[in-house]
Structure formats: C-alpha cells, structure tokens
Image (cartoon, rainbow, N blue to C red; front, side, top):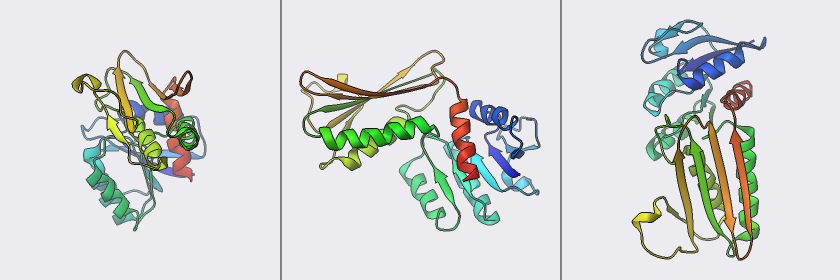
Length: 233
C-alpha cells in the first residue's frame, strides 16, 4: 500500500486525484494539505509540518508559492515528491533541482502520457524539418486558468529549442510587433474559454504543406493517472 500526502487536495486536480485513488486498492491518500483549511475525505492540514503520521510520497498539485514548504518537509522526512504544479519561476526550478540532490524529485509540466509523447514526436519532427518549416504552438484551456502560456506549451517549446541547432526566439504576442516572421521564431499562443481541459497543438508550416501534432485532454483524470504512476515509480 502506497501512502500519499496530497498537497492542494481541495483544488480541481486534488479532487481528481482523490477520485481516482478511491478506486484503487494499492494506494491511499493518508493526508491532505489545503492552505485555506478546507476539509476533504481524509485528514487535512494547512501545513505538512502539522501532520505527524507516516506517508511514502507527496503529490503536489497546489500552487508555486507552496514549493519551499513542501520541499523543506520532504527533505526533513526524506520523502520523494511529485511536482505537478505549473508556473514555477526559473529560481524555483533551481530550488527543486538543488533539492533533488537530497531527495527524489519528479517534475513535469504535464502529467499526461500523451503530452509527453507529443514532446518526443515534436523533437523528432524538429530534427527532420529544421530550416524548412516555421514552428508555432497553440494551447487552449478553461477560463479559470491563471497562467498563460501554459507550462506545457513552454515545455514543448523548450524541448524544440533544445533540439534546434540555433537558439530560438519565443514570440508571444504578434500584434505588438509589426514585422515579418523570423525563421528562428517559435510562436506561442494562448486561448482561454469555457471548460476546455487542455488542448496543445504544434504546427510545422512549410512551403505548400503543414504538419500538425495535437493532444486533447477530455478530463482531468489523465493528469491524475500520470501523477499516481509517477508516485508509484
């Protein structure tokens, strides 16, 4: 039995993880962390340091502001942590990279298996198409999402940038710049509306042909499944 502490347990993703875990007999959410003190189906605390029980791993679907507290708790208890939150700054990424020298840290901007396949395919396409195709990324999310562009869109762009033989220039807002598109640009565009769970599209536009890689998440459960798989790993 894998005992999990769920940080951000009362948020939308926390509820999705809770629902998924409820149908499993090999995992158990032993405690939850909610900064507003809301109650869930298991003991809930404002801070992880208020919990004195035993857990095997922490899944964090909360907010970037919780990172330092979560890492400090994990380092003190020597616990692995799954960081599934988006919107981390470069400094925060350095912080959990440094923490990984002491504890196991699993970070992904998107816990979906399909998205990670899209990233791998985008890298392969970039190697084959570089120099002949313009690259654009379009992401669509629900109207409650705060950060834009999404962490997943940036992760895709970063993977492509690492594959290119030249440094790419990220362009987020074309209406602010009146000039022709540079060959070295990666356009990144955000759409917010309705209840869209998450769509990501990578467009390779060449002369007289267009190649598109697209992933659509139809429920938050796909991210919960990925987070649980990472926790068991």
